[in-house]
Length: 384
Ligand code: GDP
Image (cartoon, rainbow, N blue to C red):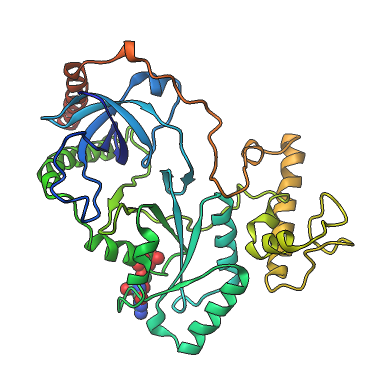
């Protein structure tokens, strides 16, 4: 009765909001309209999870215990295994990366686009390329970019947030997924998020409860800015419900400049769909088992593909970085070693916690914890 599994939709200060599905709760046809009928709870994180440094992220599936359904409070007791995770912005269980560029203003630069594509591929999360500001360019320009990207192995969505063109085509793409928008500045990331957010809404039942909960969280957050205590330094990110079936979108875009920190020279080739296709299609393997596909003899990938010069340039950059790391650390950096190549997402190394049924916290205790945290931070504000 007082436990449920839900998804963390925002994190601020010591609080997280978790949307849970409550068995038996009326869904008032909301599911039909594409919402996961849910109840939003304000939660604290169990001290044990903090102690063992088990991080709870927006997007995580969590087990909430000690739920007070009237006051909509609870405590996050455990985190279920993640399918994937992004670090910029920090979101767990991301199903889709929308790599957003503009066709003009700023002009689509293939070097920057490739860097973003490689960074996005390195997360192991499926991606879609969206080209915005179609209203600013000719049909020929749109066709030529579409053709070019198709040769690279992507099917671009061409749109204009300004005119609304092409945005409806994106709806099926977003359904039943948690998505994050990535791209350089000025391409329309905020405009796209705001466009989609403008159309987003929550189940009517939840609106009032949410307002109450969110007000509190916002006040708490203000305190932290004033005290500058460094206690609440997590970058703010929330998941928004979109008006498409099961669609969630992070309200904070990511990758202002891709660091390629997860890319290794051994994984680089697998981050280019056209190389993957050549390797899959070929009856033969490369002459060398550890072929880097940069002009070695008997390489089945070869150099007759458009992005080959970008590949070589990125290979040189990553190679240089790895050599430097070897010189400084004597070995590769840990995050290189943890890297897993695409498809099923980045797997977590840490094991799932056993559910400790015998160590449950009562509803009353949870309520007291949340309330005392809120009080404590209000007092801090008063002292100021
Ligand atoms: P961000 O830096 O990627 O978040 O980009 P913004 O959303 O702030 O947009 C940058 C500028 O591009 C703003 O002036 C927008 O009004 C403009 N913009 C966004 N989408 C479009 C579009 O589809 N067409 C045109 N012409 N301008 C757009």
